[in-house]
Length: 268
Image 1 (cartoon, helix red, strand yellow):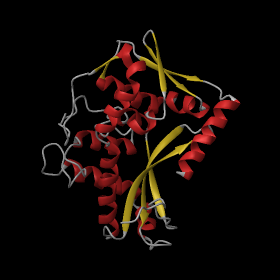
Image 2: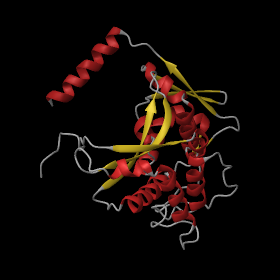
Image 3: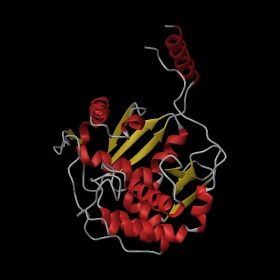
């Protein structure tokens, strides 16, 4: 075996098109951190586009991407369809001509599927409630009210419902809490592991960092909601729980120490 040092990604210059997800759909979907409802959108839209263009899985792909403003905050989410051939072969160019029809076809594929609540055929994952996926698709055409009830399903892995952490103990047990999130494959654990210290002030959990960018990122509305949902799931938080950020400027000695630690890591 050999250690891989290069990042595993592929650059592809090709043709594509995208559907912009409405803000109200972003707000609802970002509230579900256990399963990704954007995957339901891209799965159904890709299937509908392939039917319209007579393409196969080897011809077209799909993904979700975000656009950001100058400060780095996420502005919009988009469902991207693209040709899987360098330079493109015209599949998504043709799909662009049928944009509205593809959305309507995707809605029909989801709603007319014989499954009861959602399955890999219509939404790509049986954990996703197809009513919520269909609502997101319909909202691409015009504003819709979110369904009042969404099917709740068990995760494919064991979910700990017991809240093992006390809010006031988080400053002392922060490292333990982050490891707890990592063991349960919570996707925010990677970011939270970069926060070395936290403080509690009343109902406020304060992240202490020396990166100014973190303050903007954490307090951006969609990111803030995801962090709050993740912490609320495992911590006994107060009713009006919220998060804040304290930025500490690096001192010259701190910077030098960090450089030396990095040097030691490289030469070991």
